Length: 159
Image (cartoon, rainbow, N blue to C red; front, side, top):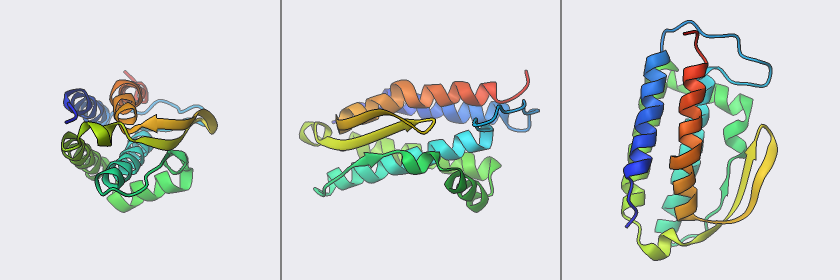
């Protein structure tokens, strides 16, 4: 079974950061960077992709993880539009985080050690390409991806 405590804390921090910055005066976003809603939509897309990979492994199906769609500007905008942004977007990401934690907690060691063909991009550039265990994908989300976006959300508004 996967210990979801760190993952749970990381999602709580992202949601807390989004709530802290809701309604605050945004800072000018440098070209190529995202505003707070875009960051949160990106987190939702990463979470949806991770949920898909976890569900596939749990179902005994082939699984991969590729974060390219989570960085696509049009797709990010579509998520914001379809959720209505703001509280609805925060609610979606919180629900996705809970679902991911619940599903991940049900996995056994063999499932968590399943190697997934993985492609990770940052700012359109590959940062990792190769096999990554599902456990490492979840741990990376909790330890690096989500904390980085919580900090990004807090930096996206004037203090």
